[in-house]
Length: 397
Ligand SMILES: *Cc1c(COP(=O)(O)O)cnc(C)c1O
Image (tube, rainbow, N blue to C red; front, side, top):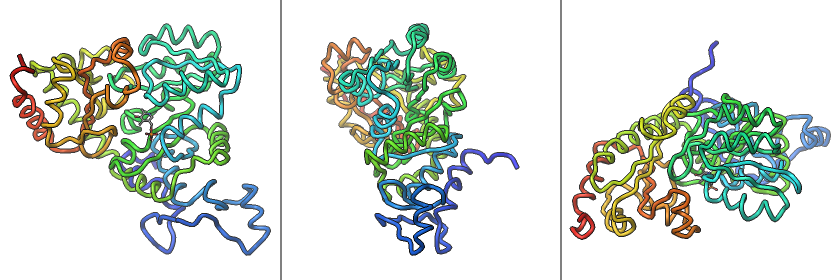
């Protein structure tokens, strides 16, 4: 039988082993530990000879169902989960990087990831090299010099820059590096980095996977061998995913394909509309033909995703008036939710940088990150339109 498609897998994958009592839905198993009458069976489960659960920091049936579902969608052998996306990233890097090791990455990774690279890893004598995002030759050159880990993210936050994952994974493989890709923005609906040659895929499940902005979580997927090592690091260090959060994420993921298809469609329509607005300076969306990463995105992504950003004339002053006028958008720091979410990059993803640093990163003060929800797109565009039209004259002049 052929492999089921993404929408079918999003519904059915990973749940079978965690069902009980004939229930059709995975239960939230809140038990901290799992008891045994048979001492030999207990021992066998404890040493991993027999399937089963021992203690909630290590494994849990609800959490396991979540891991199984993500693993199937990413086409991975194995997956292990975490309390947050940042826990997934820090634990994965912590598993493989030791004093004297070298890691190559890009300048535009997620803010928290960037802090790990610039603040924490150097203190542990790990050499960190951050290349210009999208400068493939520069990354290849650094990778060739040797590195333990090549860490990528595509598309990036907030200007949705694109990196050629297949090309970079090839360079990484040649240098013997472990290639890690943060796939939070694209989701497996639009991009499966393991198929492009990456070794490990990471998600902040808090975003598109969960999709309802009501649960934090993270996950890493890859080969049995690598995930076993990451799992071991996590079970000891303790950044375990809570069963209730796992349940919410699992439930959200059933509609992942529907949501992300709609969000991608809405994002393209909104980006296309924004191009026609006088007050808009720049629109960043990989689905626009003029986006510098458009051709690579077209090659490695099925669709261009729900994230875009745009800058407005008049900078901060304009967005101070514009954003509160939107009726169908949360002004908040999250993304990937069913509701549209907007936020200035200077307040959200890059709040810790100075205006000069943001400018150097190509992030204008008037940049707005726009996470398209699943609302009717006509309503979203009308909402933006009325907001632009009600701007005071001193802003629009
Ligand atoms: C939000 C985010 C993270 C961090 O995830 P948390 O769940 O907030 O810890 C990592 N990478 C990307 C791309 C993100 O958007």
